[in-house]
Amino acid sequence: MKQVEDSEILAMFAVEKTRNEAFNLLLKKYQQKIYWHIRRLVLNHDDCDDLLQEVFVKVWKNLDKFRSDSQLYTWIYRIATNESITFLNKQKQKNNTPLDEVSSELADNLVASSYFNGDKLELKLQKAILTLPEKQRIIFNMKYFDDMKYEEISEVLGTSVGALKASFHIAAKKIEAIITNDEIDY
Image 1 (tube, rainbow, N blue to C red):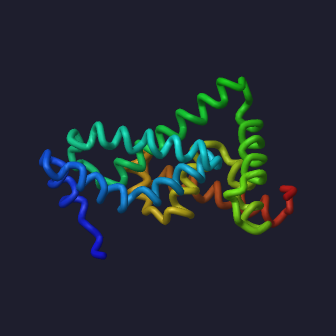
Image 2: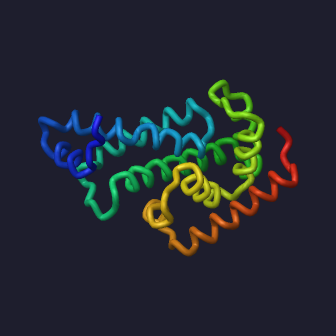
Image 3: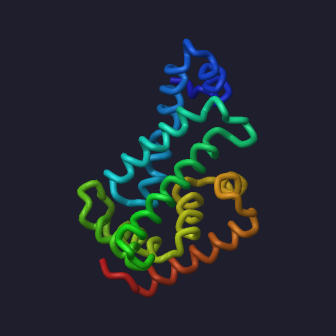
């Protein structure tokens, strides 16, 4: 099946009669990508599903206000990223937990999850990623897993390309050091 262009989806969404069909096309095109973006940030499948619904409810409510200043998927990624960060901050405040303990709790959830099907090296990589500060972790995930260009990440996060490149480089070096020095138990 041919991939529908964003401009077609937006044009269809603008017409009341084709709005639902347009949104279904948008979901088919972006739901899986957004799921994995959120999942890499919050790690828990159930939390991810809840956030995914919230993200697409926001997209539905605001799509008619989308101004096409950016690409549609970077706009959706921005919503997903912000929702995920808000969720993680609420978890941190709710539990009154320092960030390093939140990362440790996320790692424990990952190990216990029946949805995690990676091998020991994948688990080690995920745990290493969890040691990164939140912004570095988000940048690393978007660049490494989502294969986004720095310009696209810049649109999503509102950060300069130069700062993103530096953050990604530092994050990659930290992860490499952790993995090669066997600093993480799995």
